[in-house]
Length: 471
Image 1 (cartoon, rainbow, N blue to C red):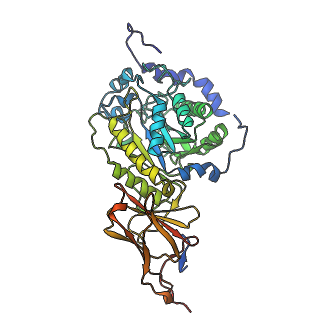
Image 2: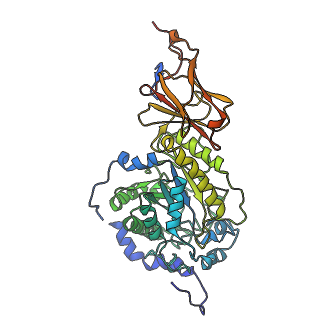
Image 3: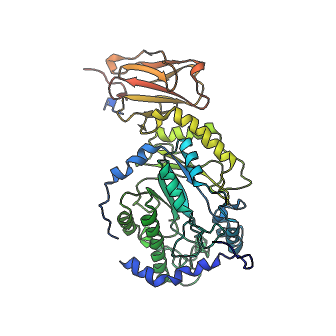
């Protein structure tokens, strides 16, 4: 859409759009001693089959991009928390041009980084959609100088490079006039937590308005699911209502009807496929599939003043620790309003790619490694569990040690480097306790970010868990 130079820009008509479409949307809604480490045209595959690619992927790129990408305030929270007015926040849409948006270049960069999937914000909490939704004028085509759908070229570019497509979608919508219509079930109205007008009614509750919002919510999700067929839907913004009010159980079934092969993260109550810890590394591995989402600096979207970028080495360590506990890393970057990616983000992704491509065999398709205490660092295992990868973050000073391996060791080497000398020392055979495996690691074999040592075993790994006297 080209902007009329004689007409002031205003994104505000989108706030009333949900009311315009409400009748049609409502109609839609109603329709031991050792440890061995529309009705769909097809039925939805079993969860394990749908999740297979995700378990193997290990690295994804998160993209927070929207009208907040001007870089002067936080995404959505700026007006919610009173840092700026709603009107001034939404006026940033006038600078959202996407004039340097080159999704083919994005996809090539993500592939170079070693990512196997990416997740882009299709709509954040502010309600501004990056695709040309038919249910609101608050979108990139109708509500910004970008003047076009930005999601389709993103999906096409990723698939061209063999990457899986993920789309972020905020459940809540602080611009929709029907959203702040009810309180969470059982809420105490006098609680200060419910005084924000964007999230909660400041007068009487309006259950009919909430029904209209759910119809709008489902309508946009149906658009995304049927049009883009994302491999992954990444939900957020579920905390202001109960699971029952969101009707998440019913939503999960609808999503499988609209897109049978798609998976979803864990922010739709208990109906997601995997967990998403945010900005912190779990101390112990979650019991279900999981993914750490973390920023490359301190901000999700582009922020001019945020210069606290993580180093390549720090990102390598995050990735290795995630993989070592059987999880993925979803590393976030923030393009500018014009679609260009900051040089600092590019440098981190390219540096990360040097490491991921060199050590691909230890990363992609691996499973969680050995428990803490056996080796001081992250570890992964091949799916057959007969190859153990030791990831050394620090200089080993000549040798590294691994405890508890009951198997015979066939060979030790540096991934992408030389064969290494190794031997077991000590042990108590009468208590079924093996010696410690010591591996010589010369300085010349070290990687500048993290050295990976490959330990090839005779048979699947068997770990000693404690002394047991043989009878």
